[in-house]
Length: 63
Ligand SMILES: [Zn+2]
Image (tube, rainbow, N blue to C red; front, side):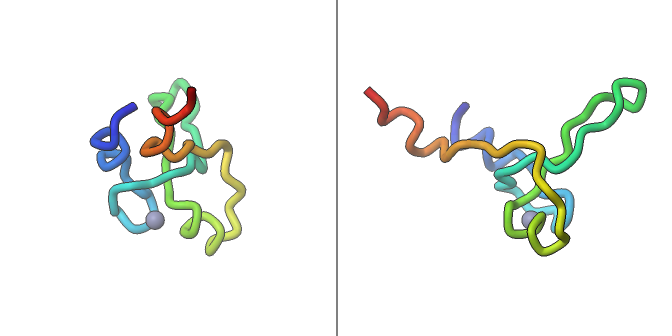
């Protein structure tokens, strides 16, 4: 995934780009969307993230 894709991932709490964790998924009947947030926003609301995204800026450095 590219850094540009990361910037398009919005935070559901602040409506800001760059969310790095998924906090909720909709039921398939509701569209099945994944709801993203910043880790800090999720922690502030005591929401346990479902999964995290790795730091994509470093993903290509592995050998
Ligand atoms: Zn946020």
